[in-house]
Amino acid sequence: MGNRLSKIYTRTGDDGTTGLGDGTRVPKDHARVEAYGTVDELNSAIGALLAVPGLPDAVSACLTDIQHELFDMGGELCIPGHRAISAGQVTNLERLLDGFNETLPPLKEFILPGGGPAAAACHLARTVARRAERRVCTLARAERVSPDVTQYLNRLSDLLFVLARVLARHERGTEVLWRHERSKPAGSARPAKSAKKR
Image 1 (cartoon, rainbow, N blue to C red):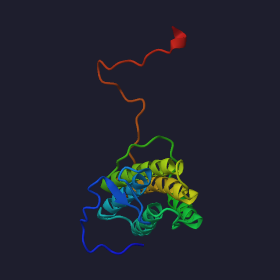
Image 2: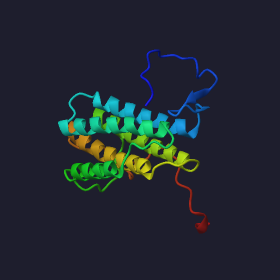
Image 3: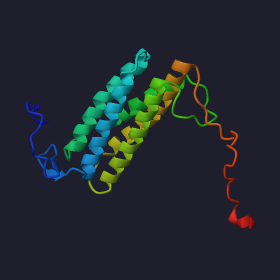
Image 4: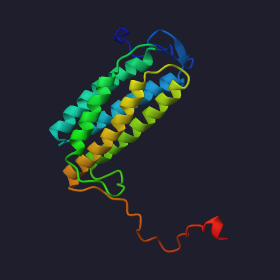
């Protein structure tokens, strides 16, 4: 890894480029920069979740470990050819997911992203995890990326969904269900008929 920064601004990026971990300079919107930048955003979203008071200890410990692993992942994506995420870490996420999911009732309806400050923050982190996965897939079409990275992000988004359910029940005792047969406002448009029935 590079030296720790002693000066925050360097002016080296004023031309619209940034340096990768191996010294290569690329445009700031390069697919690799988008990938590790979105992983950084995901880490920050989890940090915002961890700042919500009253999280269960098991959830806090799990998310703190994940933050460290996401920091490692950012390093892997920043340095072409570097490896930091392993298949064992993906398996560990699956174990955590199964453990938290065991405490929940079966899900029979879609749920809305909400349920309390922590649950809502967890849903937001989940959507950022999905976007990070998409950015890594984009990079993987152009350059070699370890499949462990995309698998980790995929399992993490699933884990965050389960944790959002855990936190919604912790905060409010229940989740916010999507009411697909709710009443429509007066004057709302009716669905268009199928072309086959015309």
